[in-house]
Image (cartoon, rainbow, N blue to C red; front, side, top):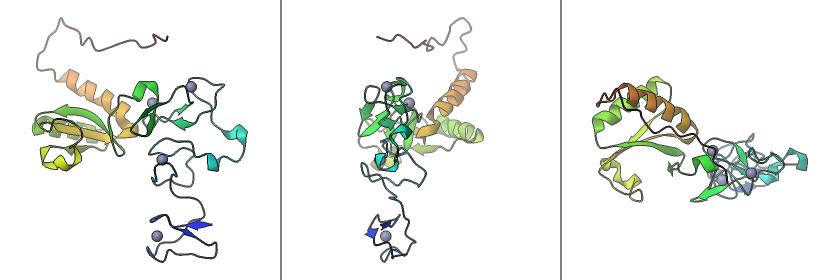
Length: 200
Ligand SMILES: [Zn+2]
Ligand SMILES: [Zn+2]
Ligand SMILES: [Zn+2]
Ligand SMILES: [Zn+2]
């Protein structure tokens, strides 16, 4: 069986080009059967929804193990940090798989919400800083309201980064904001640092 990587149509093995798209066919399934997102030949997990692509696992021993519970087989990966997770570890939000630590991350397609601000100026400053660190940035504001009708208030500028770079971007942003604190409180501490690990 061959497939068009563009329109996902199935073809006979003898075909070479998609009649509709005029692109060369590939001999692997180029889309996720769960979310219909594009996947590449080397993917073991769907990069869009996180599901384990079981049809690509030929040997049961090749099933990745859950990073939280090493004896349990993973059924997906966290779409943010990429770690393999089992049935017990998975948090599902809007059809995508997350680990417990990342289930709060707000996604729009393959971008994650990093920060919201009310000023275009601050957004531009943050964008420049992150791009300086090599992290691609997309900024959505009221004028792009079509993207955010479901995300609550529109009187804000949303700064988004590719979902797999969110942790890196958060660190970069924290450094930036702490070095530019407008309050200059020398005695106070940020108070946002928490030690995780209170497991039930
Ligand atoms: Zn096609
Ligand atoms: Zn998928
Ligand atoms: Zn994660
Ligand atoms: Zn687990």
